[in-house]
Length: 83
Image: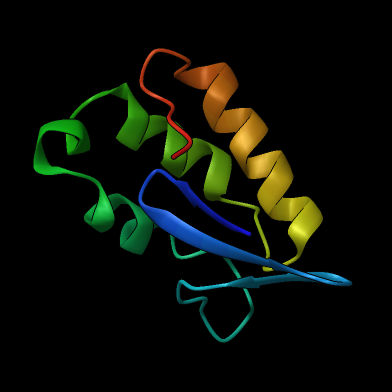
């Protein structure tokens, strides 16, 4: 199953997920990379700010990515999309 959340692709597999986005050496979510993948018209909206806020403590774990997406949805429900 593939999910695209804010233009970030996740691949769900048995026992966990593989995130098709880069993480830094400390396995922290690449906030700036995620924002760079947003369509230009969305980068300067509240969505960019919410991603920065929510992604600051996210790691590469599936649970962390789930929490990240809940946070983004809560912070910018009108701009959140799941395709």
